[in-house]
Structure formats: structure tokens, C-alpha cells
Length: 577
Image (cartoon, rainbow, N blue to C red; front, side):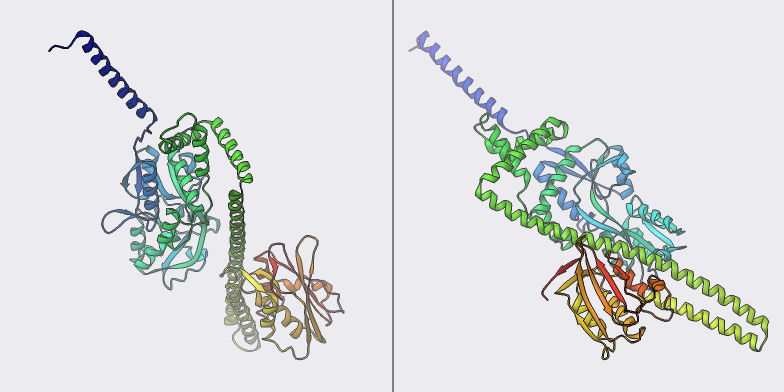
């Protein structure tokens, strides 16, 4: 039986409504679903183990490779590796052939052509490697030597500048890869290699080279992109590294432990998590469904707008202030905040300790450079004088005149020997990191080398500790030896301290001997004041000055000597007496 026209019309209308509803649903899902537009990122791959290299299976490996691949997985990037030397990679980055180069440092010259990430991924310094027994202990030992460098490497640029300051004339041999640099040096093409300490350790062991005591140019390893391009990549990298440092369980912290045995920074609640929650809450009224998917999309859009829109930066800052106010009203968040504050204080303390060590190291290097210069001058002058006396002796024939010249020559040799002995004692200064010393314990160790049987002593230090070079014991040995050996009539010594108005403290070492003449109070700290004494007050002052500690003599002539050791704020503390 044929259907009526009315029945057919109703059926067609129902079908049209079903199609319309299906189309509306599909359109809604299309609007609310995130657009996961995959992005290709071309990344340079240079052979700089363990930062970046190709493993035995021919696959990219290293700390920076693992980091960027983990970030790419989170951001939806597709990494395209572009192998090449470091020099080739810089050229490709400048021309736009690649998007990113890893594990490099920024310089004012490079910043003209490239943009760099702000978060330091890793810290390193420039290190000189050479054959064992090469006799390279200072920058001066590289004068006239052949030095191998990696093309495009910041270490080579820094070394040339460092050498120029000391008038060092070296022959530079540049290679395309780190392996060529070390293998060429091992084969005798160069006398030394300059590279980052992290990259050089493996290669040095592989080719039988050793690190020397010449190190300089502390640097932070970061990422670079072409000038004005790929800013979203840098933004994502900075956020990733900052969050990784703050979380001990992050992939960043695990990779630092894997490649270098380093633990990541103590964890804090990542700021971007709180931002994401605030963004989702603000948009919940507009998008009721698909909240989890929208969170990813909003965060990605926020990062893009963050780079381009200053007004959005103000909005994000305002949201952070709002979150801070809400956290103060919430007991759970307050407890978390207090815990984070404790961690932050601990990190600040360790950062300050590191700053002290770095400052002390710089001071020690300056003093060793001065020592090298002074010792070289002493030896040069001694050799010149010795040559003169020998020439005069040859002309004198024999007799008393000849004997007189020989006596003078012998005295000159003694002076050179004393200079070398002084340099040997001085060269240990600054070789180890400064540390905290119990002053009373250090003083006891110092006087254990002396005969104090005729001199009584009084020590009141209340558990005082000071931050100084490991050679601090030599300072007290020198002072106490001067009181025992170089003064007559002293029967007692007292060691106390006083607090100063500028928040420093002063350690007072006093005796009841004849004292030091006013004209000699500063001279006693000069080099060579006691010509036959290896433990001079000059060395004592230099050891203390590494950590900004000063020493003076303020006693009254005829009433006893008084040495005052002034320790600045932050370089002393009190432990158990």
C-alpha cells in the first residue's frame, strides 16, 4: 500500500531534523576540541659528549638530547636532528636552516645574531688539558705552546682573551670536532686542549690526557634560536627548565642524576599549575564540558599570547596576586607555603655559600698570578745578578777579589732558593675550597708545633668558627711563632674576641712582650721582611684576605704585641663551645 503524502512529508521532516542535530553536535566538538598542530623543530646535533652526541647505535644521546625530546613529547613537537660540527651548526642557525642549538653560552657578540634561553640548564667552566707531566700549572706556562681549540666554541674565544691579558703568545690549532681536538693533541699536534670541563673529562680519559690547574670562564649552558624567531620554543624551554629545577622528581632532575650524578633543585609547587587552575576556573562559565581538554588548549594559547601581548602579562600578574591572597586564607596552602619558605631559605644559604667559594677562588687566582709574576721577577733578577758576578769572577783571576764575587754569587743563589721555597708554600693557597674552622681547635693544632712551656695562655672564644682557606692553621702558627721565637720576655698570651658595631668581629691575640716599634707595624706584613723565614706574616695576611679577613698589629710599643684579625659579617658563626 502506498504511503499518504502527509505521512511521507512527516518522515522527511524527521530525517532532516536528525541530520541537523548530528551536524550541530559535530560542529560543537570541532569548536571545543584543541587543535594539536604538530610542529617540526630542527635541532643541531654536535659531538660534545655527554651533553650531545651520537651513541653506538647511531642514535642521538646526551643530557640535552633527553631534555629536548621529553619537552617535545609534552609540547607536541616533532624533533628533526641535523648532525654537524659546532661551527656548522652556528652557521645553519644564523641562516635559519635549523631552529635550535643546545648546550651553548651567550656572549654580547652572539646576542646580535641569536636569542638565548634565560634559565641556566647546567654550569661549567673552561678547562685546560695536557699530557701528564707537561708542566702546565698556570696560564704563563702556555706561552709559546700550541693550543688546540674547537671551532665555534666559546672556550676558544674566552681563552684567547684570557691569554691576551697576560701577553701569552700561543699557536692556535682549530678542529671541527671534539674528538679531533683530543686525538690530535694526544698524537703531538698540540701541547694542550681547551674545552668545557664537562665535555673534556671523557675525552681526556680516552686519549690519556689530564686536566691541569688552569681553569677559567665559569659559564651557564643554555639554548639558542635565530634572532627574532622561535620565541615560543625558548619560552617553553625556560618554563620546562625552571619547573624541572623546582621539582626533585622531575625528568630534569632525573636526567641530571643520570648524566652527572647531580640532584635537581628542591621541589616547589610549579607556578604554571596554579596559573592553569586559575585559567580553567575563569573560563568554566563559558565552557562547561571538555574542561580537561580545554585546559591544555588554554595553556598553549596563553603561552602564545604571553610573547605578544603586554596587556596579558599584566593580567597574569594580577592572577598571581589573587592566588597569593587566596592561599593566605587556606590553611593547607599556608602550611605548604611555610614548608616552601624553609626550603627557599636553605637554598639561599647554599647559594650564599657558593658565592663565598667563588669569590674566594677568584681571590686565590689573583694572588697566584701575583706570585707567579713576583717569583719570576725574583728569579730573573737573581739570574741576571749571578751572570754578572760570574763574568766578574772570570776576569778577576784568583785571590780575594774572586772569593768576594763567589760569596756574592752564593748569596744570590740563596735569595733565589728562598723565593722558590716561598712560592712552594704560597702555591697551596686557594687550591682547596674555603671551609668553616673552629678557631680554638685550629689554634691548638698550630701551637702543637711550638714550645709553649715558658708561656701561659688564656683562650676565650665561645665556640667561634670562621670561614677561611684550609691554610688557616699556618696563620696562627706564624703569629704564635713570632711571639715565641721573635720576641723576648713574653710570659703570657691571651686569645679573645670582641663584637664590632658594623656586625663584624675581631679576634685579639696579645702578649706581654716588648711589642713592635710603631715604624714596623705595617712593614712586618711585607714580603721579605724576615728574609730567612718561610712562615712570614705576608703569607698570613694573604691567606686571610682570600675570604675578606684582615689582620693588623695594634699593640703599644713596650707593652706587648697585639694582632687584630677582623672577620666580616657572614664569615663567622658560633658553634658549641
